Image 1 (cartoon, rainbow, N blue to C red):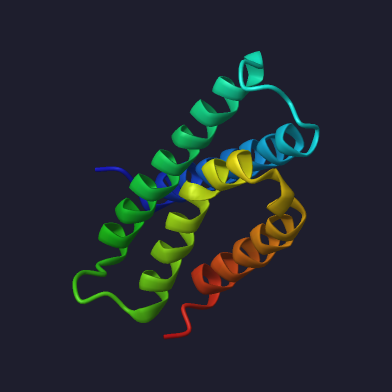
Image 2 (image 1 turned 135 degrees about the horizontal axis):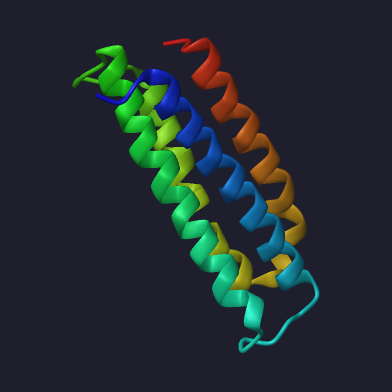
Length: 122
């Protein structure tokens, strides 16, 4: 059995990886880097691994905490935030003109996800 602390560590590692890769994707898009740039693939792989670790460890934490279906509302909102984070690199790369606006959205969504995880309001 994996402990709750291990799940938290892996989840946070995934979250940090997501934000690191999103920062790189933003920089990539704003600088107008070409499609064949060697870091593009690395950024997208890093982002995918971060999403994978965050979601799998998040569900592991839910199991450890004894939370099952039907989920509380805060879990549904966090899943929606993770879906947005999952598609963001594609949106940023395809429409770099949105990067400045999406930058602030990422900060707000990250803060909202942290609040939901810490407070579990509903």
